[in-house]
Image (cartoon, rainbow, N blue to C red; front, side, top):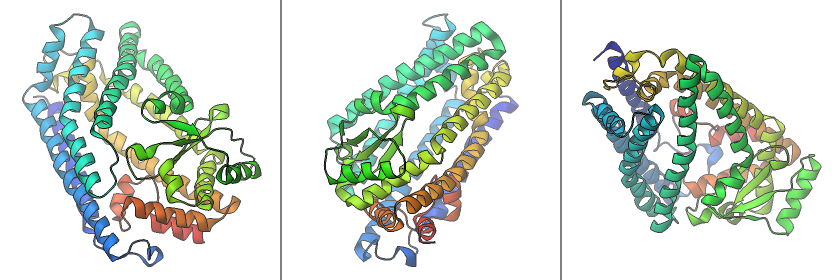
Length: 408
C-alpha cells in the first residue's frame, strides 16, 4: 500500500464527507418559510408535499452515496480491481482487449448494482409524488439501450485512446484530444437526430397559434429557426423541460409535451426567448469550446501520470497497465474536476441571467416569471436552498434570484 493508495482513500472519503455536509446543510433549509417573492407558488399542503419530496430524495441520496463509498473502498482495500484485472488477462494478451474487458466488467457490475437504486427512485419516490409515468418495460429497455450506447461510444473511444498510446507513446493525448473534440462537435450537432430518437419520439410542432407566435418572435430577433420539435417527455415523467441543441443549419428547439400542457403560449414563447438568448450570447459555443479545452487539459495531465507504475499499483493491481492507471488517475484528478465544475457552474449561473435578460429585452419578463413559477411548482423544486449547496451544485441561479433579476 503506497502513499498514492492512501491519497486515493483520503480523496474518496473527503469528497463523500464534503458532499454529505453540504447536503445536510441544504436539508436543514427545507422547512424555511417561503420567500416573499415566491409567495403563492405553493399553498400550505403543496409546500408540505414539496418538503416531503425533498426529504425523501435527501435520505435516499445519503443511503445510495454511502453504499457507493463502501463499495469503492472495498474494491480498493480488498483487491477488487486485481480480481477484475486477472479475469481480463486470462482471456487475452492484447492490451486493448484486456482494457475493454476490464472496464466492461466494472461498468456492467456497477450498472447492475445501480439498477435497484434507480428502480426505487423511479417507482417508489417519483411514483409516490406523482411524477413517474414510466412503465417497467420502458425502464428496463432504457437501461439496455444505455448499456449498448456506452459499449459502442465508450468502447470505441477507449480503443482509440489506448491504440494512440501504444502507437505514439506519451504524446498520445494530442491525437486522443483531436478525436474527442471532433466527436464532441458532432454529438452537439446531431445529438437530437441520432441519440434522442433511441429513447423518445420527436414530432414537428403542429401548425397553429403557438407555432405562429414562435416563428414571429424568431423573425423579430433575426433567429433562423426551421426546426421546432415536440418530444414525448410525458412517456416517463410529468416534469417539463425545453432545450436548444446544435448550431448552424442543425440547430433546433425541442419542447417537452408536458411543457406545452403546463404553460400558456405566451409563457412558452418566453421560455423559447430564454433559449434563444443562450444562442445569441454565444453560450453554446463557449461551453463546447471550454469542454474541449478541459478535455485537452485532462488528457495532458493523464499523459504525465500514465507511465508511473505506482498509479496502477495504488488501486491494488499487480501488473501496471494503462487501464489500471486510468482508474487511479480518475480518482487523483477528481479534486481538479471539482474545481473546474465550480467555475463552470459559476459561469453557467451568469449565463442564465444573461439569457433571462435577453428574453426580457426582446420579449417581456412577466410570462417568463410566471413560467418559472409554474415549472417550479410542478416539479416540487426547492425554494430555499442553502447558499453553499447552490455554490457547489447549481448550474442555474435560485428561483428567487432569477425573479429579482427579471423584475429589475
